[in-house]
Length: 297
Image (cartoon, rainbow, N blue to C red; front, side):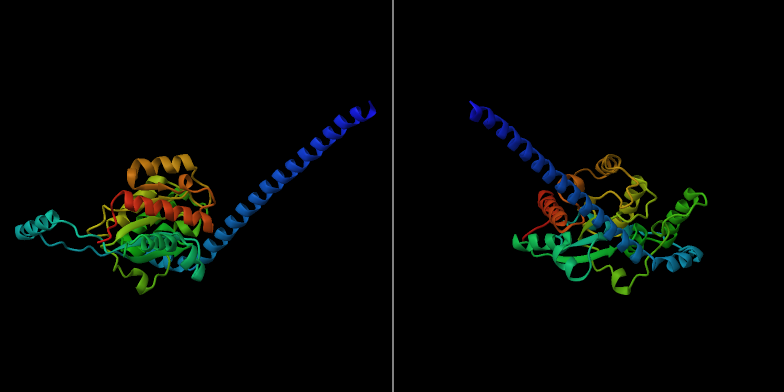
């Protein structure tokens, strides 16, 4: 009789111990995941602060620059006819894809783990022989990207002025006014007839307004040539958390439709980690094939 009484008691004790161990393990996993996310955010914040400081002096110069008006010559009827004929011609298959926007890695790490590198590898492994243009910037704002694309300085300055006016005298991040000092190689637009892939805005430059970011994306797309309509936009909410995901994704989906990929919807890991970048690359590859933007011929 005593043994029968002791057995249920021991079983209950064991169950309690197992529950405690499971709870402790779960708590440990949650704490580890929180620390990992926090460390990644700190890394990207530090990267952003380091990279954008160089744009401060360039910004001051751009604000003082004056834009001279350019006289436009009237377009002759012959030129209009030629343009219409050219538009009616079948557009040749794209020779490459051009990555524009944010980069989260540098050096060898970028060459292996960035979504650009993974996408290029997927294309190659599946028989797509395409050139790749890397027009991404580490820790840079969208203002620098527009400058690199060749958007008129007067248009970029209008954004800067609007950001300063909206601040109403308050201090604003350098990413909202700063333009990176770009090299000749970075501003070389050999990619004009490539397929544009835009993944921009993580570090700011658009005054926390998704509609302004969309407008800036349109300006960059306009700098492309025959494949400007064959683009993909990848969305990622800003580093500072100033715009919530629903607001951001809602505006992007409405503006870009089937051209848009929400990185939040295609990733299970933090988008800036190696795993997250691979998930984004897989979604981008699938989108390029789905929209018939790439050809094996």
